[in-house]
Length: 104
Image 1 (spheres, one colour):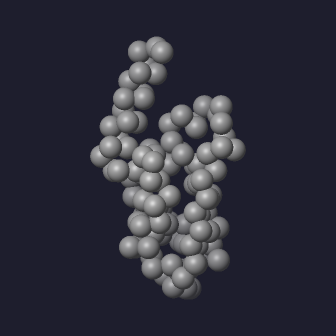
Image 2 (cartoon, rainbow, N blue to C red):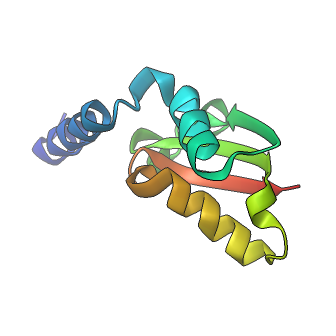
C-alpha cells in the first residue's frame, strides 16, 4: 500500500468513526431521512456490490434511495433531491460516493 493510499484509508476510517456510518450505513441513512423528512415510503438499497473494483468504491458507498415524503409536495425534482442531500449532510461525498434518488 502506498503512502497516499494509506492516508486516504486512514482519513476515510476517521470520518466513518466520527459519523458512526461504517457497518450500519443503511440504518444511518434511514435515521437521517426519517428525522428530517418523515417519509411515508422509504427504501434504501446498498448498491456497493455492483461497483466492486470501481475506483470510487473504495472511498465511499453506492446507494439507491426510493422515497416519498410530505415535504416534497409542490416541489420540483431538483428541490426534492436537495432536501434529501441536506437531510444526509456531510456523509454525501464522503461515506456516500454515489447516491441515486428516486422520488415517489
